[in-house]
Each structure stands twice: as C-alpha cells, then as structure tokens.
Amino acid sequence: MIQSHNRAVTRVKRAWVMAGIILMAGKLALAAGGDVYIDDHSFSFEGPFGKFDSQQLQRGLQVYQEVCAACHGLQFVPFRALGDSDGLGLSATAVKAFAAKYEIFDPELDDFRPAKPVDHFPANNSVNAPDLSLMTKARAGFHGPFGTGLTQLFRGIGGPEYTATLLTAYTGKEKEEANTLLYANKAYPGGWIAMAPPLEDGQVEFADGADNSVEAMAVDVAAFLTWAAEPKMMARKQMGFVAVTLLTVLSVLLYFTNKRVWASVKGKRESQE
Image (cartoon, rainbow, N blue to C red; front, side, top):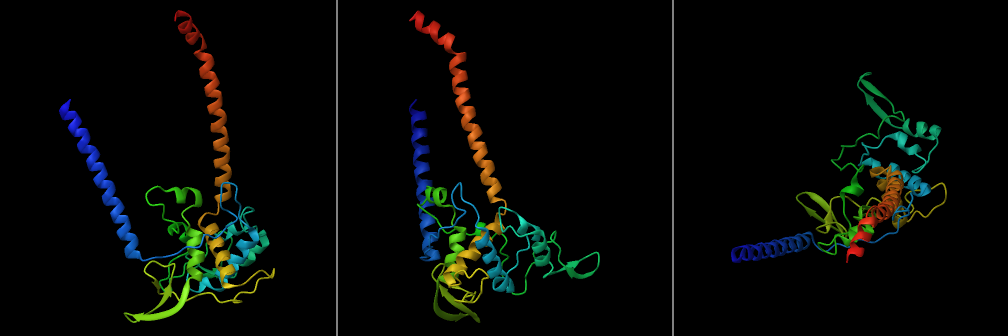
C-alpha cells in the first residue's frame, strides 16, 4: 500500500512538472515571437449558423485578382467552385468566362490553353510567395487563454482575423536586413515582414460601390480566402447541426427506453426493501 501511494504521488509530481515545463515553453515562444495584436473582425460566416456573404466573397475575389494574384496563387481551388450557391454564387456562364481569363498548361497539348471550369487557379511561384489556398487555416490569430483552448472554441483559430489585421497593421517603418527590405507590421510575429503593404485606399473599384478603404478590402479578401480554404463550410455546418439534432433525439429515446426496460426490476427491488 505504501509503495502504491508513493508511486501515485510521484506520478502527480511528474505531471505538475511537465505542465510547468509546457507552460514556460509556451511563454518563451510567445516572448520570442514578440507582441502582436489581432483585431477581432466580425465575419458573416462565424458561429454555428453563420453563412458566407456572396457579395463580400465576390469583392474579395476581385481584390485577390487585381492585387494578390500578382504574387500569390490559389492552386487548390477549382474554378467551378465559384458557382457554388452557398459561396460566390456565380452563374455557369460567368464561371466559364472567368476561367477563360487564365491560361493553363495542358500536358496533352504540350502547350497553354484557356482554363476551363474544371481546372484550378494556377500556381504562382514567381517570387516564392506562399500559396493562399489554405492560408486562413494555416494561420492562427487567437492563442489564449493559454492551455485551455476556450478562445479557439468560441472564436475559432482566428485565421481570417489574422489575415485582415496583417494587411492593415503596417506602421510605415522600413529597414534593410541581409539585402532584403523589411516592413514593420504589428500583426506579424517578430514585427517585420518582407511583403510590402499591398493595399491602398481606393485601389480597387467595386461595381456595387462598396467601401474600398484598406480596412474594408482587407476584410473582404480575408473572407474570400476563408471560403477558398473551406468552400464546403456551409454544408459541413448543416451536416453538423443535423447530426447534433439526431444525437439529441437518440439520447432522449435511450433514456426513456432504459427507464422502461428496468422499471420492473426497480419495482421488485423497492418492494423487497
């Protein structure tokens, strides 16, 4: 008994030591990355019943096409997805016309041809810039409270917020390091980023006359990139809602079935007492 008790105490001590090490490692990592701030933007697709705003996604696509596509690709996003009713909602004719603006290398023809809806956005490796297909899922804007995950549970990982904030967090300061011009950015870990400020007020003109300030365009393109990373988000939410509803009904049925099955046994036990 004494040995078992000592072993249990030892295990508890080791668990506390490991928790302390993990906590300190996390704090050191945050300190090394520098202080960053992320604006908590409100997106229409947030929450269990949120939905994509098709107009916002179309504006974000325009910002991507006119600004971001010069350096960044979307190689995992098919053109046909632009026609999804729970996404951008473009017509089949519009999708076909949009795809035709791009040229895709066809191995069978051994030459370039106009893209078709079944093709994907072309990759862009001209300046070694990262592909943006999954960027909002690869970046986390919210990291705390430390170790509990509550922020991520209620607010998500913050990929869209990180993207929108990054595009608006330039301070105007510059420095040269290792023959590379860096730009001060309060949202980027370390405070300095090699990407020059991509957006300017009035840079993109929207057909619907929507706000084209830097902040508005940053939010629009962040929403579009979220859709690019999860084009079936609405279907996934709907399936999750149906699954939770069915599980709730099943739990209630199992509860009453259990009471009925064991009612006779419980009655006999009470009569014997």
